[in-house]
Image (cartoon, rainbow, N blue to C red; front, side):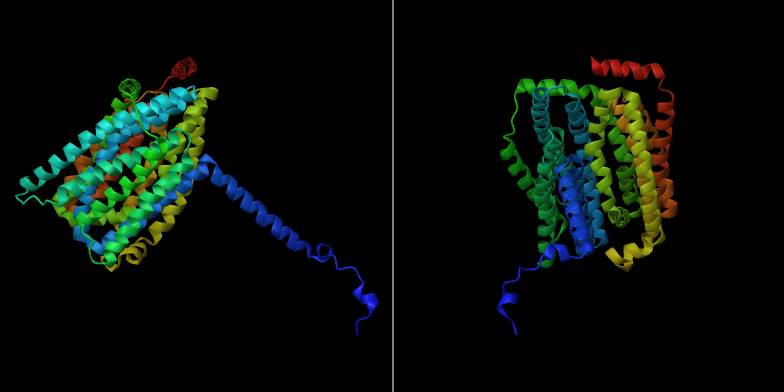
Length: 458
């Protein structure tokens, strides 16, 4: 029985009797949560999260399109999408990449703000030209092939190209002005929205090449519209002229080089499709999509590394920037080598799991895709390095080497080996690209490093 004395006793001190390991567990959980929260607030964490959204959505979209359209129709979509990527490559060369590099080098917030406003004006002009060129080119392609021009294809594709370009510029704008967090929600609207709409179209049996391009255009346009209103985007004629004057100095070589790089892979795929049919292009694109999640690292690198390299130049000159890129490049190369080696061991199973048994025959293509993207990693480090020191001529020459090698090999390779020949040519081109960049950097004299530092400080 309970007595009065027992009722008057003080309550137990639970903290004193709590097992020691419990406190440690709670302390560890709190520490991990704090670190994740801190990472999410930082530029690097926000950039990685953004690229996870973009690359993850593209990965799932690729699987959905292959299964929903079939390999042949997906091949036709791939050929058209390669043109969209060409337009995006031109935009990156002349607008987005110079904006990120020059914006990082601006000494004041006001100068950077004026630069990005001017680049917005350049972007709008470019998209008007892209809309006209895309519409005209699509009509011409139908007429040259002796087919009747489809009223639905031209506006769908032209809208997809223009609105995709505007939203892609906006995400680079956010990184340039230091608002990486805003790029996360904006890309979520565009890419997760795109995936949701495509899934709905497949479920209702309305998925087609035309409806896929309308989806890309509408979701990209919605994301850009929201961002443009929030940022109150605008520009003056003077800002546009000044921004173009600054960017064209480093964009001419980059522009030509990036189009040549487009030829190394996308151009080779178009040639391969003309020889082996659109199914070959669809198979190559599908295998590339399997390693799409790895693009998290590649695309995040595009938005972070040029900014960090410019910061290193301001702190200690080009030698310090080169040392940073060497360390970063070496660490990333080792990680990718391990990941890609594991994927290569199970390449056939990977393709069967994601796309079905019809794609298992493309396991050799997937292995060459892995080698191609492994070579891309060090190539990008050298490109960042030459961009930072504003010496873009080696980038142009290396791209000429790469494009010439790829295009010379693609026809005989595809004739003899089919779809895998596309990747043989692309890998050969990328190898030539890397070898020339290494050679060009070795030839940069030590006195040029000091000259670059003096230029940056002045």
